[in-house]
Every structure is written in C-alpha cells, then in structure tokens.
Amino acid sequence: METSSASLVGVDVFFVLLGAILVFAMHAGFAFLEVGTVRHKNQVNALVKILVDFAVSTTMYFFIGYTIAYGVNFFSDAQSLSGGGEGFDNQGLSLVKFFFLATFAAAIPAIISGGIAERARFWPQIAATALIVGLAYPILEGVVWNGNYGIQDWMKATFGHPFRDFAGSIVVHAFGGWIALSAVWALGARQDHYNAKGKVVAIPPSSLPWLALGSWLLCIGWFGFNVMTAGSVKDISGLVAINSLMAMVGGILTSLIVGRNDPGCIHNGALAGLVAVCAGSDIMHPIGSFVVGGVAGALFVYLFQKCHNDWKLDDVLGVWALHGMCGLWGGIAAGIFGLKALGGLGDVSFGAQLMGSLGGAAFGGIAGLLIYGELKRLVGIRLTPEEETMGADLAIHKISSTPEHDITR
Image 1 (cartoon, rainbow, N blue to C red):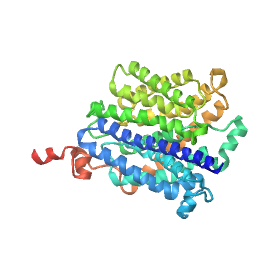
Image 2: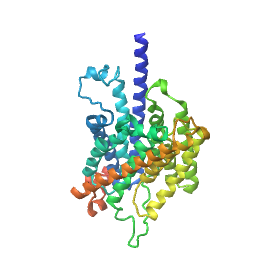
Image 3: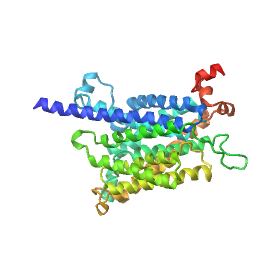
C-alpha cells in the first residue's frame, strides 16, 4: 500500500515537473518574440533581459515572494524540504510545485520587457523585477490562490462564489500587462517612433521568423501553463486542453481578419486567445472558449493600433493590449461563458469575476506607477539619447548580435 502511495506521489512529481519545464520553455518564447520585434541593435539586450529577469525572479520568489503568498519558507534542512516536513509533501512534490509557480512569477517581468524594449536601462529594470516578483506579485497571488487577507471569503459571501482565475488571466497576465502600461508611460516613446508633428514613424520587426518562433514556443508551452495548473494527475482535465486549443485558434482567426493578414497580428492573436482563456479554461465549453479567444484576438489588434497611432503609447510588443486587456477580458469572460446557461460547468459568479478582474488589473497599474515612478525619480530608468541611438546591445552589453561583423566592418 505504501509503495502504491509513493508511486502516485512520484507520478504527481513528474507531472508538475513537466509542467514547470514547459512553462520555463515559454521564457524562450518571450525572448524570441521580443528579438524578432525589436531592431537588430537591441536583440542581444532582449535575450539577456529575459534570462537575467528569470534568475532574479526565481531568487526573489524563493527567499521572499513564496513566503508572502503561501506562508512557507525554505529555511529547513533538505530532508524536511523533500521528505514531508511541515508544509512540504513527500518526494519533493512541494518543491516542484514551487518551481512551477516560480515560472509563473518570472513571466511578469518577461511580459513587461516587451513593452519597454529598446530604451530602458538595464539595472533599474532588474531592480523593478526584484520588487515586482519579491513583493507586489505575491500579494495578489496569495489573495487569489491562497485565500490570504479574507478577500476571497468576502467575495464568496457577497457573490456566492469566490473569484476564479484557474491559470492566471488576471494574476499573471492582466497584472503584468497593467504594470507594463505604467512602465511604458513612465519611460515615454522611443526617440524616433514619432516625427515632429506627432505622426507615427513605422519601425518594422527585425525578423518575422524569430517573432514567429517566439509565438510558437509560447503556444506550445501554454498547454503546460494551463493544463498542469491542476497540480496532480488525478485533477487533470482534458477540458482545459481543448479549451486552450479552441481559444488559441479563435484568436488566430479574428486577428487574421481584423489585422488584414498582418503576420505580427496573427502570431500575437494566438497568444491573445491563450491569455484570455486562462481564467476559465477549467469550466467553459469549448465553443465558449472559441468565442472568448476570438474576441481577444480582435481586441489585441484594435488596442495595439490605438496605442501607437492615437494614444502615442509606445508599447513595443503591445503587451498592455495582449496581456493587460486580453487578460482582463478573460477574467470577466469566465463569469459569462463559465455559467451553465452558456454551456459551462458553473460554480462561478459574474459579479465576483468582474470585481476580481478589475481589482487585479488596478493593483498592477498602481504597483507599476509606484515602482517605476520611484525608480525614475531616484536613479532614472531610460537610456541616454546617445545610448538609445547606439542601441542597447552595444550601450549595455558591449557586443551586438553579429560580433564577427563588428570586427570586420
């Protein structure tokens, strides 16, 4: 009997570890999506930022953030950590759950990175990452996924159900996207994105193949992001997988139409659908997920264009539109398409979804204003005009994406 129980725990360890690896691989997707979108002179910086942000995020989450969110720390001997000490499951199951959740936490600065590309200073952004993942993100995570501060209990008492965010439309995506909006506003536009009359000067992607690769990597990893959120084999649901799939293709199709065949819109449209479906992927009907993803794809294209053309917000990769607004839509949509009347499984309230979604997005925006506003005031967050003209690769890392060309030219 003990052998059978140990085997089941071992299967769960492998299951969650596989999910963590898939979400970790998504960070390569974030990196290459940015590499393909920014100019050649900023490609090295994009790759370095994502990797260093991951390291800083994991460190801060390990020592501070996870304790804030779940009340558990790792200041015990290895036997306790891996063998069922207080707060820890046998065979290191709790440890791989930390790994899985750490990849979620690290997605926040990876999201922000795309919005502030090509003009942000390196070390202030690393400081922002530490503050966001070590302090701000765990507060929201703990509220939604661990019931901290009694807010979920209040939601249930008020609306009949707590706020539901199965895989992070709000906790990860909307939160990160609204922080990014604050950071973009604090930084200002790239120096050559608008002319003297305020008209947009188009800056085309440097490499559509790299951009497409980034999108594909994210799409593939997303099935670990959503499906493995179950946390154990006995709780896994094929409904989450098919809902993720249908939302993704819905986002692709509407972005194809609204974006008029633009490849950047199409590849981001797939991600828009996946962002939106996270919150309700465990309760919606596949047709509902298709609709939710389709709305998200169109929403991304419309808002991305409005930001750059009308509102003069130079969000390079459109992360506010993609994560901030599509995530917000997904959190609210779970309270619509998750209802039994629309084919969902129920156990959700529109009121709780609306309030929880707006609250999570607002918290992200406020956290972003505070963190980036203070960093801007204290140390500065933007490259000098000369450094921006040179490009972040040479200005920060002293090497370009084609070092051999640097030597021979």
